[in-house]
Amino acid sequence: MKLAFLITAHNDPAQLRRLILSLPSGSGFFVHIDAKSDLSSFTGIDQLPNVHFCRRRINVMWGSYSQMESQIVLLREAVESSDHYDYFVSVSGLDYPLWSNAHILNFFSRYQGIEFIHGIRLDQQGERSQLYRHHRPFNHLYFRYGSLGSKLRVALREIFYAVGIRKPLSFMAQGQQYHVYKGSSWWAITRDLAESVLSHWYKDKAYRGFFHDFFGPDETFIHTIVFNTAFRDRALPTPPTVERLEDLTPLTFIDYSHEIKILDEGDFDRLVASGKMFCRKIVSGKSDRLVRLIDEVRAKEDGRQSAADSTSKGRAR
Image (cartoon, rainbow, N blue to C red; front, side):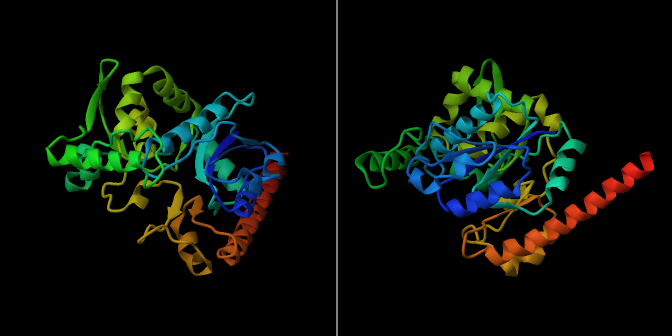
């Protein structure tokens, strides 16, 4: 089982290094550093084993098309790598594993073929879907906050909504109808699905074009592919009741509260109880004690796994 970790980062180089060194050493680590960030502050991380910094860097703006662009940059570099990866795991640079590396590898081997992604159909969400009904003109273009272009974009969005022009939550592409599904941008997908995503991006202009003026395409582009095609049969069942965004995040513990909470040692018990593979948000200087506690649990888990493996080998003899 060979994993490719797709890491989006924009700050905290020390935490990014800590994350990479904590994960299975035989994996590939593909890192996208936001174009707004000073790349020199990440010097040396690209020299770690199996670490690849994306040559193309996107100026990422929250909720915009650029978030999906950065995911595609990561996915393409990993898929086209000379190494063959079985799973592509999307994480942020502020994530940290809760499971031991043996547990992570065994999990993906045991459930090989499953797409670890959730999705809800937006046109069945009532008032909760209203944010996605806004046309967002020029959402695929970068404008500095406060610039004339940025102000024009916001004004057009409000005008469209005021006169009753709504973004549809279904569309046609290549003769197929797609209903838009929403999930989380933190997932783990197979090579088959990764290649399908790249094909939709580069070869299906109608599909890709729908998301040009759509809110949060990083949480809808891939999910819409999955739940409108045969990949739906390989995806995790979506929880019957989805009240919070964390309900759509299958592998990562995130406390969204008012904003994403910076986790500390006070969160340790609920992280362990969550059963999730990763947690976010881990910040250098604020989460260090928590990381030490997590590392102790991971080391014990690795020790138990090694003992179990030795017992199995002894019985085999």
